[in-house]
Length: 297
Image 1 (tube, rainbow, N blue to C red):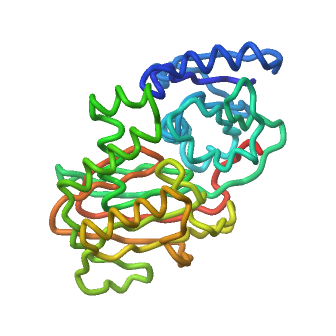
Image 2: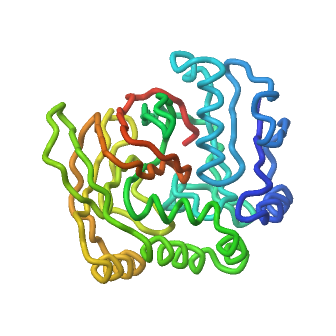
Image 3: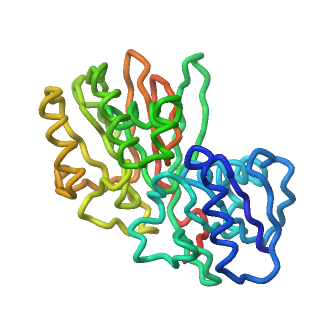
């Protein structure tokens, strides 16, 4: 059964307009539609195709909800699709790999494939351990702060309705204004390096992140490996220059390093962003679960 989970509040509440335009231009046969606020009330059964109609966060919340309900070992019994009604839709980029319906990028094909899943086990601000999953990318540092502002700032919400690129730029500038490079202990092999300061640490499964920013490499979707990129501590002027270069499509990240696990520890709480969602904590264990879910091609 095709079940569509619609987040009408995506893109600062304008997603419903794009959804209506899409419905006027497609024909997919019978389907059921549910509002994303009622995740726990959505009836699901093995074999269902579950489609998130919203942004990256809507897809992320759907995957996490299904895993919470059926268990990680059973999530491969479902197929996940995505209708890009969000502000950035990093999971679907580049859109050349998508079907475009009514101006929105879509992955709803009956053909499906296995896809790696990122898992993070982290210690939250209360000291409790939490587990979350992600499908596209994750980050620590200035971009995580910018994502937090992009999602929660009232002024940015207004600009999302005017221009996503303007909202992205303003979020970054607000994050940079008060940014202080976090000190972290970092490991990919169980051996921790010395305490180091970073501007950003990106963990990539899909090449696009934070709007139109992207890396030049395209990691395999089901090889069981992340690619990570470290941008060391820089002055705010140098960070701004890097932002401008990335906005122009230039590569400032360099070559990624493959790994199947990353551990980050810090003395002070830091932001961790995954598929546009942001949490805070002091210890993060990331692992790449090979071929854990099925997705529409």
